[in-house]
Length: 456
Picture 1: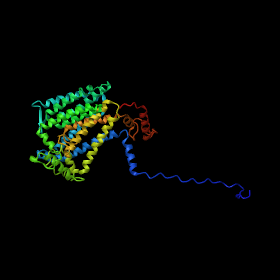
Picture 2: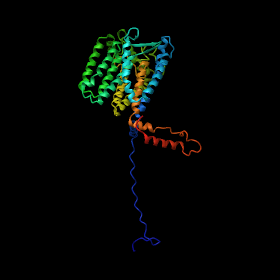
Picture 3: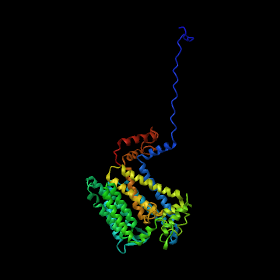
Picture 4: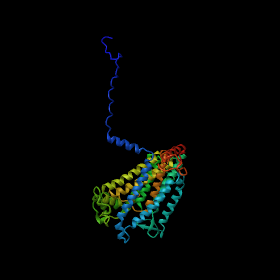
């Protein structure tokens, strides 16, 4: 055809397709946003609470053992004891507590509920024995101890915290199953009278700090049970009034209240402990003076290995060490709240919330006293301070949280899929087997997932 291009072969020329415009490149993703999304995905995994509770409590306990050894050496030598005396006793308590933790972690929920009444009865019986002359003994002015022989003592009021959590959770769960919590009398009775009975037995010995923790546990249980605001405010008003009377009528407690924010020991060195706790924190700097290099523990800071161990931690490990401890307690508290919020079992919700309230409130009161923000209440830092009576029930309570975290539906499924990656099935190995270890384990995971019944 005239005017049209021809190829040499006489065939029409090949029409080439037009080039597509290049695809637009995705915008550069913000690395901070990418890190945030990655952390959020990891945070929402089924086993996050399990790992936070188990790992956080283990790290707090191990770091506490290290600091007990460092903070108690001078005190032990001043008492003509070996330098590792308090550390060995704390290590023994931690070993026994680890056994209690594993036992609580392996117990089914029904057994936890069955133990509620025996633990409550045992705690009340021991707290009554404390007031019997010749059996109970006073330590630092508080009649709250029972001598077990030798250098071993027990403080029954510490087990009263665990008793109130378990018994209160079981009581509220049974009332919720019967739909009785909508009536205020069923919400308060017999929970509040029983809690006041425990508080009365504790206050007979003068232990105001433990009484504050039990009050916090009671309010935590009432809050989780959905107590109306006016009912909650009424119980809180009664507790505040009783606390004001107990503080006003005790010169020692009034002196502690006056030491909030003190920067000078004051007349008669009434604020000596509070001020030297601030000195220890202030001299630590960013990374501390080094492990074992504390100056305040050389007789200047009373109770350096018990109530004020956080101050020695700040002096030896600095701001980095204290923030690490705070982060571990924050992670533990978040995990406990997550377990309580995601469960459908009312007992698990109340028990997990009660344990979380207990540990968080006690940590806040102890650290607040060391920082000079709260009066010195004489309560140890959970899992961290020296004291076997406080460590044993706390580790059992941590075992409860771990058991509840493992019982979440998503966590059960994730744990069922976790199997060893290497190794053959026993009885099928040998040269005649054609299946590799990895392929056999993959099949085992699929079989386990297929026949999982949802039980632990």
